[in-house]
Amino acid sequence: MEQRVYINKIADFVDKEVTIQGWLYNIRSSGKLMFPELRDGTGVIQGVVVKSAVPEKVWEDFSKLTQESSVCVTGTVTKHPKKEGVYELQVNNIEIIHIAEPYPITPKEHGVEFLMDRRHLWMRSPKQTAILRVRNEIIQAIRDFMYNNGFILFDTPIFTPNACEGTTTLFSTDYFDLGKAYLSQSGQLYAEAGALALGKVYTLGPTFRAENSMTRRHITEFWMMEPEMAYYDIDDDMNLIEDFLEYVVQRVLEKSKSDLEILGRDISKLQNVKKPFPRITYAEAVDILNKKDVPLIRKTENGEEHIRPFPWGEDFGAPHEEAIVEDYDKPVMVHRWPAEAKSFYMKRDPNDPKIALGVDVLAPEGFGEIIGGSQREDDFEELESRIKEHNLPLEEFQWYLDLRRFGSVPHSGFGLGIERMVSWICNLEHIREAIPFARRPNRIRP
RNA sequence: UCGACAGUAGCUCAAUGGUGGAGCAUUCGGCUGUUAACCGAAGGGUUGUAGGUUCAAGUCCUACCUGUCGAGCCA
Image (cartoon, rainbow, N blue to C red):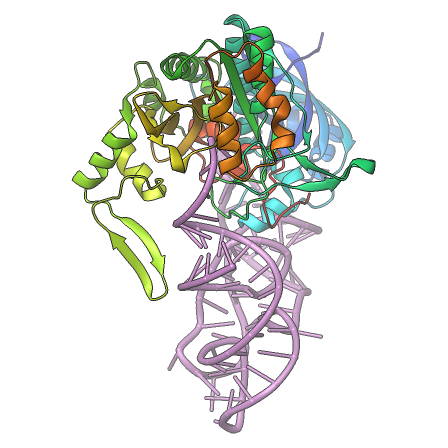
């Protein structure tokens, strides 16, 4: 009796007759033999159609198929005659559901623009489905880690009346009689309210940045996971980051092995991601830059100016991050930053008011910043003057200041960019492949 | 936003300033173990747009459009 099964479970059905409900990915023929490759979303399996062994109609039906035609194929599962651990389907019947029109995406090479214009079809290909399954596993691992460590899921609003951080540009929209609303660039300020209510919370959802950044690491709509913890200082924060990253990476290694294989990922690099991670201060990072003679490059009217030694107080660019990370095979935590380079809500170091208690986590292999976190300013006066210094509208922050009026406590948190995490774990060339439909400054379709 | 590079068949790419080609895809034919299968044949073009230089422009010049990569900013 035939049974419906999915391709990723096919090994359990050797010598049994099964029906695969899927699509034709590719087909090769050799006279009286055909080798259709079937995909069903969980994997790909090669069918074998022998002309002398199937009814004439089955042979004719297979001859008619175009790439991405949808079919239900029945056959007996066998081991591949040459390849260990690979299975085939000895076909004996087919039901055609739909003959596809000529499919634009062939198993050959295509350009980026062509593929992104057809993202809704491109995502059917083996590499893209593998990435999307790994993304699923990463998010599931994050949720499990948070749940098992006592964090409460705390959903923050996407419509907001003001900037969480005054620095970056926001998308705006009309909001009835209340004027402008802005799409959230971070759920952090709301998560802080949640932490003072529930102890440990996290948000996981889309965030928006109207930055005209055309790099392989930026999209305008990205997903962020932001935990926020009451009674955590910056060192507690870094301890959590270590536990968290180790868990997620090792969990994905365990559960998504076959997908990482499809992606050609060097697994040994990810196996290294075990705590402790290197922790270096910003000042130590600057020392590294100067030892390696990496200058700050500033653009001027007549070209570029190379400044040596790297001046204290400047933020790092891509070449600096690379130079800092290249000696390590684990994520690197850079902490205690110049306050001026960082956001208004970060707490100052009690030992040095020029230092903010922030931490950036740089992924290995040049994938750049994946996490940014900090201990938050919990003193009312300090925070209020910081808001004023940054020219932020004080009225809009009164509710936020309330958190320092009513039972203020030391608290910390961080934000993880989901797509950057996916890019790193899957070793992607570009972040646009880390999310089903990437939004960039020059693309909103499909 | 700035910088570099690119735009030729459905796709990926060739073409010294001098007759625009190939592979894949499509259609047809062949092949009993193929792996981006292979072999044979056919159809497929206003060379991104607008100007200019030249006897002659896909090729050189100018502007614009679109894209890619990099920088800044950030997760």
